[in-house]
Image 1 (cartoon, rainbow, N blue to C red):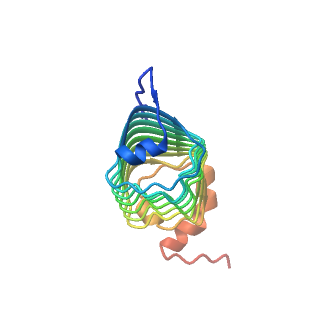
Image 2: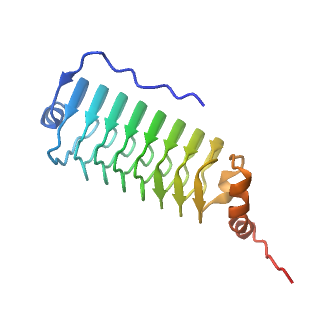
Image 3: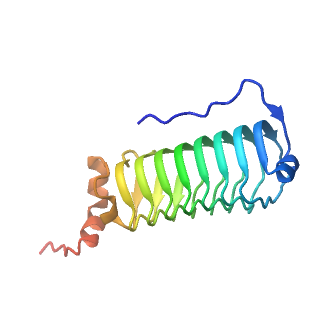
Length: 213
């Protein structure tokens, strides 16, 4: 699967989150700011931005419109991004526990080395999205549209896929533990080793009774 990478300008202006809060937008900006801040910005715009070492836990950015962005080594725990539109973005080594992407549109997005436990992707639209070396414990994809989505070397533990719509979803190389909503993963790709491990869960979801006597 080919995911379009962010296109960042060769020269970025230095900004702070105080500037972002005041202007509700960041354009061709570089932000390195380790000061904890809780933003509350409706309909913010981000374009051509590199963010590093940010401490944005519990910030609220509903209807965020982000394009061509990279976020590195940042704390985005419990950040609210409901109804966000994120295009061509990479999140690397970020803490995103409890992050809320419900009803968001995520197109050409990569999450690499991120902690996404209990993150909320309910009813989101994910197209050409990669999760690489991510922790997805109790992550919720209920009602999500997943098209061209790859989970590479991830841990999916009690991850929810109930009522999801899947097309070209690749789960190979990832650890699958007690997944909820196997029926909604019809058409997903797994490998033989995974099939052996998940067979009891598949049987249970189909209402099969296994007897060895």
